[in-house]
Image 1 (spheres, rainbow, N blue to C red):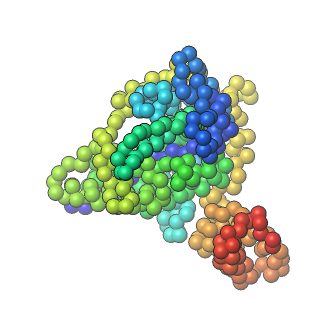
Image 2: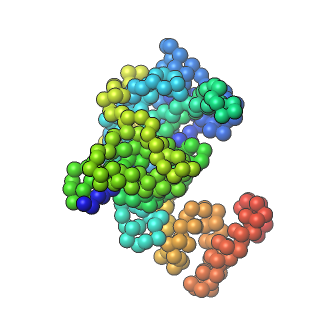
Image 3: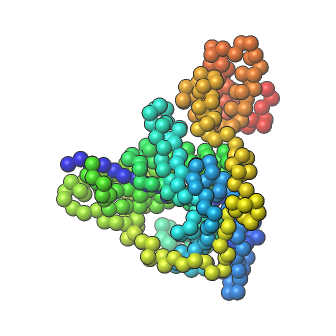
Length: 387
């Protein structure tokens, strides 16, 4: 019997707004002093009321426009009820049935395979919520001694993107996550550094018999903090579930973690469903009328936001390959490093009449290997470069 893996992603990214999602506290992920950027609102003191950060809403809509999502005229916030120490309210303000963006797609444009680059991963939704605090577990001689909570991160605007279950390998999941990170950086809505926790990936995996429409039992792997982890954890989980099914046993619906040292996933808890969160419309926030079909009445002018979008990464890659006859691998390096791309384009401009593929290739090789090699050896930034 042939089993086919079906994979969907849930990706969270912290937005680069000046203040938090529902209060005026600074949104500063680099703050080292615990519990400095907090107030009665983000600590959920009785009697406090949240206020929507309009800039955060705008940033998510920009992402939706870049992905070709449908932006509904109406949206609202909801309460997602669960209790955990890093969540001061005892619930999270999120979005459930009326997200800011619906549908859309992201191509696997970072692939070096021309056919794979054409594959478009469908998006289910992109919505906005608040982040939670950070839990720090202290130990002494390998034994737990105390648990501390830093609420600086609590209330930071958090974008969540959910894909359709249309991927089939760890490689595709990694390519999607890498492509989304570059898009968020291009739009300047998030730094999306995975090692800093500014972008977190969760992978949903199930297996079903090839050719059948009915999906298998879904397992979620939480909080993957590197692209390598996304690919490796996904591939491991596919094989784990395949072995279970081939024995004639049933896969348990659960949430699992990833142990990078051992290279295995492990059980964390049984998976919650939407009914467990007891969603209800957030009573302290008004509904959002995002735009109006008339000239007045909405929060945003969608066409103005659309026109202001920069050249998108996949468009930029196609242009570089077409204009400069670069390979996919060469174009990938340039679109992921803006300073190098600017330098390269200026060099090509200076070549003038000698703008042949031979000179362009030579210029690329000098910049991408020799110059970058010197810069890395000298730990020199582009700003310090004297050329």
